[in-house]
Image 1 (tube, one colour):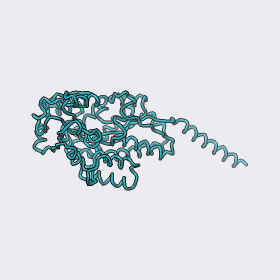
Image 2 (cartoon, helix red, strand yellow):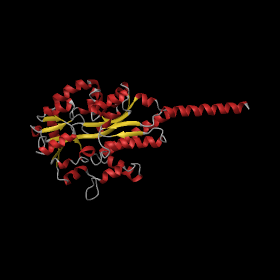
Image 3 (cartoon, helix red, strand yellow):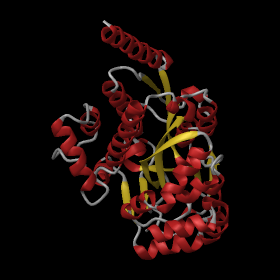
Image 4 (cartoon, helix red, strand yellow):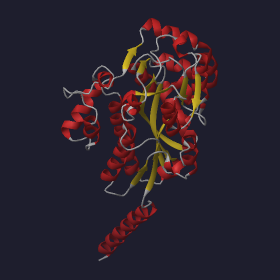
Length: 366
């Protein structure tokens, strides 16, 4: 009889503990991201919420809000909102968090990265881990790395092969000091504005060009409707990461924390490969094609790829842009060297801002 009573007490305690843990979870968690759901970035965010919801049997229900709507369009405010708990989570660009975390400007140093292999090595190395730890020291649990991509330039005036070709052109750029200084050093007239204002400027002829990644942004935005000329110069890269308010993450059980961490890793890998589709050595295509075949992409990649297929059914991003009438030139190493030398003063200045030790760690990681 005593054993039976003790057993019932134990069952009651365990049941009560489980209910208490469940009661600590919100009915819904918020996640902010910068673009719309039709972009690879948005698909990565939605994919993450799907994985978490499925693998926790609905215990953690995350609703993703695109277009930076939770921050009223103020993208650079998102980090502080996650840190302060106004937003639970975010899938964001290092660019948008760099005003609060200056070290993230590492990825915006002009012409610092020459290949995807170098990017991956830095993210997986000492420098990448330092950045994740730095974010966590400020109260946001960080998972990396996804990718918006190498940022390329387009314009409506002329082909760009040398710094002088940018002279006097008005370029819409990200509202970050390093971006403005890079284009000023190249003789351009950089302007900061939201995308709606930029497209109006393109149509009215008051803005000549812009810079953004190819697959993740320019193809979904149909940039060929505004610009004829594109230059592939890979002047800097735009990584993405998932950040979760520290208190929110710590409120999850260890088992659910592990699920969230694994889902973040898979979603970021998926998003990065989708953003690189048709641009790298074929690794991204093989990865995504296998996911589509197996159905592990949950339909996101299949739907996205179907929107920009060539007549032969392939998804070669550069050839697709050419098929839309764009004149695309890829800088030679000699041409890129001219831009690297021209922007060296900006590079040297921002190495001091980022931190010489961190930059050296990244160089060693490469």
